Image 1 (cartoon, one colour):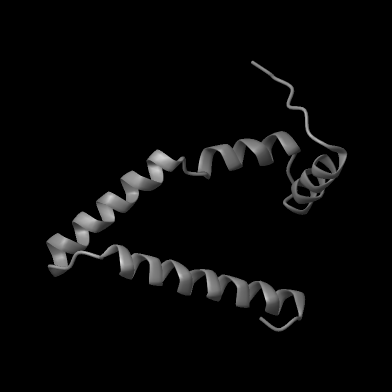
Image 2 (image 1 turned 90 degrees about the vertical axis):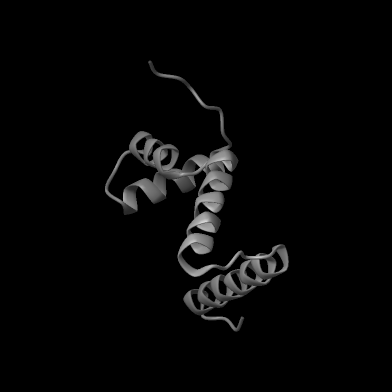
Length: 90
């Protein structure tokens, strides 16, 4: 079953450029995104499995403070990487 998604011209053009860069159709690009992106429920379930693994294997539970600090470090690293790609300072 096909459907139509209404998006702005700028978004359409960006999706077209992304699809072309990957040598695929916009349909395939969007289907790939839908197949690989995780829902909030899936993210929570994955986090719970990871927490259970760390507790079972290493006897450690990650606290909310530790998780927040790790998220912040990952954001900083991601921003620094994006700045390098753009050729600007982080």
